[in-house]
Image 1: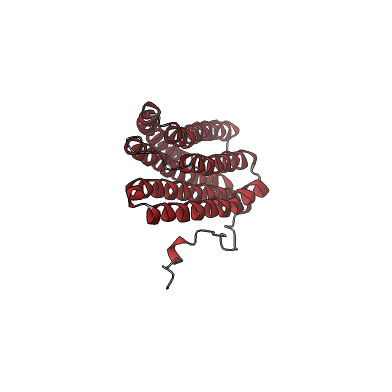
Image 2: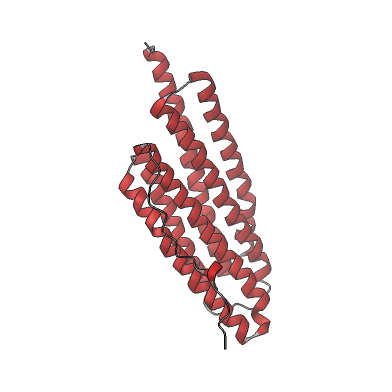
Amino acid sequence: MIEPHITSAFDRELEAVQAHLMKMGGLVEAAIMDAAISLETRDEDLAERVRKNDRLIDEMETRVNEEAARLIALRGPTAVDLRTILTVMKISSNLERVGDYAKNIAKRTSVLVQMTPIADSSSDIRRMAKTVELMLKDALDAYIQRDVALAQDVRLRDREVDQMYNALFRQFLTYMMEDPRYITGCMHLHFIAKNIERMGDHVTSIAEQVIYLVTGEMPEEARPKGDKTPYMVEPRG
């Protein structure tokens, strides 16, 4: 029989790890939007803060993983408790990758501010980033509430992000064909849009981990994808 005081100590330690995970999630949410806003407003100082704050996200991931590993080593959790700890570690890894993409956007912003703005592309990218940021918020809420329906909703919304990316891809391609002077800027913007699309994939992975945590099974159906750019070919005349 497990001693009550041992169980209580485990619960407190697990809650502490999850609190750190949520703090990390908040930092990542802010990084997504700050990176997009710095691009739209051409704010190099904000972009620099996003780059610097990525170190905090990395440190939070290390802390979460170390505390989670300690729980496994010292408490020997089984069944649902072990699944929870492993889910925490996987979510922190996905959050760290999203933070890296935000940092990469901020790096490209420092280059793009030196160039002529390209139509409404920055505001379009901000809307795409906002969509991903809201997905992340809901995915983390789904984790806290153990809400499978909300996690599934987040998973399905990744298709919207893919569709936004496809539209931007075509838009940038059109600009580059119409005026070669836009090629460098559009390439940077395309990579930024792709970074956000990849953020959506990692957020979707978080939602899938929530589903696994609650049900014990990963979603059976294939994740709906709307990114068709790998299959695009130049039309023949």
